[in-house]
Length: 258
Image 1: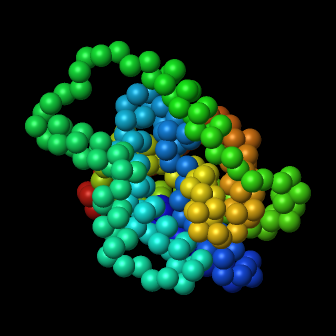
Image 2 (image 1 turned 45 degrees about the vertical axis):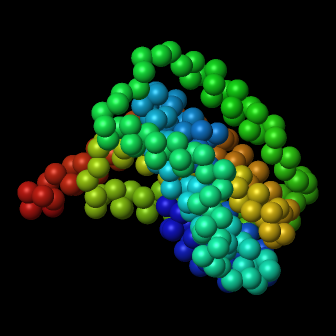
């Protein structure tokens, strides 16, 4: 998904006629999405319960490596012209910011030795709501309402990438590979998610186009909440039918019928 978004963002660059920093901002916004518990994981929880939430966290394991090894270096190079080195990777590996990645590795280790999760009650609903509230409260976005009109072309283009191109590409890939149905469902749900707030953070950290990034993030998120999410609830059966079609194509393809 992030690679499809990256390529799509690059292809839209010449059409939008953006300068280097603004183009980099748009490409980053096209590549990374809100797959975490603040949106994608939460939606998976609504549709599939705690198992969906757990699978979404495994799905999200790509994010920290991709952010620190690809997105941040790319933003830094575009901003300052500095080159990427092995020192950047060493800093990434040793950084305490990688606690989620270390936790995932520990979880895989425990799973490998068949050490099951303790039978302890976790108030998932309360923890999710509290975490989401604190997360969004602490963002501090720089957003001006008038920028909605100023950056409308970029915002609409980003909607096209996030809500049409990436989901369509995801369905095509799912047709070609064989995964557990629950895993495929999580991937399909996550493919519809809006832009990530880290696209704004990267613009702030590396002095890219912060106003454009904030506007695109807000516009994309509002478009998702007002249009895409209601459609997902209304047509969840249709999404399940797409999923069934993928499995139908796979099974009969093996038999040589399709």
